[in-house]
Length: 290
Image (cartoon, one colour):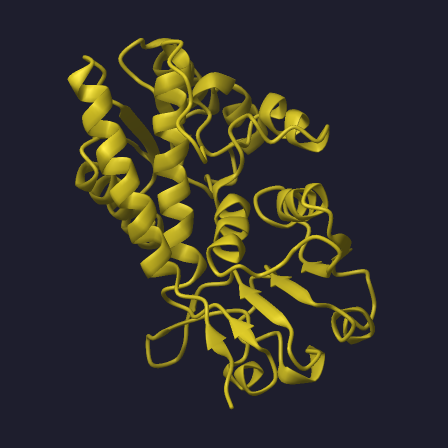
């Protein structure tokens, strides 16, 4: 019997419906949440992601603006634009679509975002709060979505052994921290960890975020494990695939598909963070489950 599917589209749509109601309530009170995305250059994949974010924001009744800048924009100019958006009282959430061109220091640009509008959760202040054990700030969207998926399917976290494969600041590290805060025993793996199977074959939950197509095969999985696939790639036929090999479905109990797993939840959590930021900037109380 194959693995059961953790359907991110269905869970994300439930989140989106809650957001529609929340945004309608905010608008009735004179607040129209506004997400602004800064896109540098004309990378097709980045442009596609940005269009998807803007479309989903508008679908829940929010405003969205895309600020497009040329690939050759100077770092100082980009930082200035980001600071201006952070200072704009009409803007609730600011994100900079990554990756940026190689001549730009991503850290400098991210640090220019007001932490109160950092709906990606990447600024040092929001990251530091999370790593002090405080998830009440703006938390990175993909890790937040992963935990929400586990909760939606009543998959236990506390007391389980969770292995996170990948240590990026965007996914791996914050995912490990969120799982730790939910009382999992967490192991983080990376390119210098050696053979990963000695860790992953003991794991109840595995989060795979390495950025390599079909990297994670069934030989790495304990029967009955939960496998979360964060990767997204195009195969030779142009189909979307993940970091996890399809054969893992024959061993795992639960598996997120690609597409339709973590991706929709990442966007849903971005919009949830934007509504949260809009409420907090005006001193409104958070809604339950924010």
